[in-house]
Length: 272
Image 1 (cartoon, rainbow, N blue to C red):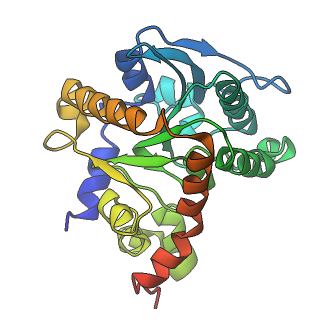
Image 2: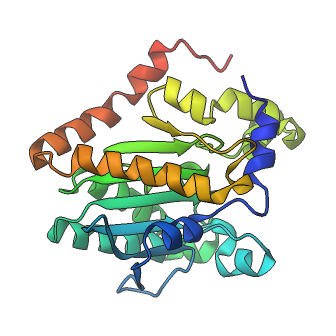
């Protein structure tokens, strides 16, 4: 079992490729679209259209900054309600034109500020989850870094969830979890182990379908190889789902998420 602290060390490396890097290298004809048609735009989520092997696709990516300037621009990867509404607008457009949706998930969590709540943060996330469950086009989600709580789940209700080797997904951050359980945030690595948030744990629990291998010591050590590994995965995943009848697609997607509680109970895990 890999040391959880080592995984976080790789995740927090300043040169770890983000969604923008993967989109630029995988979809050179990507055209970004802005705005939720209600309040404004959220730069921490990019949405647009592109082609992949001559297949029109819709791309959605959560941005994480790699320096102070980018962190401020992308709100430290904390998405606002207008970002989730923008992504849903693009997903609905994809459904209309029968374009597969590819999501790059990387957020520490949705923005918890007062103004976000006033603009309907909780509803925006819930609305994404509800609509993605019934979206009549293939959806592929790729966890490329942090997957924090509902902020990540809002882009993970998909036909297949792939996770990079050193990515994580959990209902709460380890520090917040430790603070709630023991009133001691310094025990965050202990909490991280209990949360079973690594790609291997998620695959074992049936939450993640595929693990995409990273270069030795993380994607930042050889970004070109990482791009190629993701490229191979997307090619196979699209061929798997793009020709599936819509009714079969929706039925399997629904059943996939209905069985999560059963998988967790069956695993025999306990918080005691």
